[in-house]
Amino acid sequence: MTPERFRAIVDAYGADARNWPADERAAASAWAEQHRGEADALLAEAAQLDMWLASDTVAAPDPAFVERVVASAPVRRRRPRWLPLTWPGSRSRRAGLWWSGAAFAGVGLIGGLAGAFAVSFFLVTGNPSPGPESSYLTTGFGGTAADWSGE
Image 1 (tube, one colour):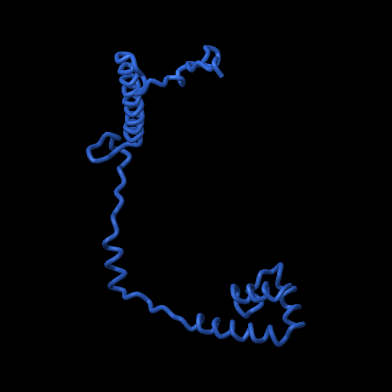
Image 2 (cartoon, rainbow, N blue to C red; image 1 turned 30 degrees about the vertical axis):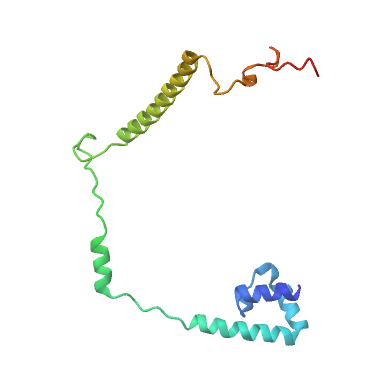
């Protein structure tokens, strides 16, 4: 046990050794016995903070305030079992799943259409790049667009 670790334990858990971590309690107590002057100063400071924290009290809320909060809480209405799932005002779980699936498919369709438009635009114009450099269009098997024979 180091003095820094003892101080960290006392700062975090207070002066009462019962609150210290169980696996370090014996070592911290032994260190405090060996270094009584330094430990007493740290424990006295922590005991004052512990007493100050223990003296803090919170007043009970006003009963009228509690009643207002409870009255303002939303009421969850449950659908009676005899009503069908498509009753007006109720939304079934399958309807929510259907809409999320339709939205996912719609986004995919829009992305596909945008890609098809971009490809058709490049095919119609015949120039897929804005500049004369098109070396990225070749593969490793087809040769290069640049002529390096003079090097």
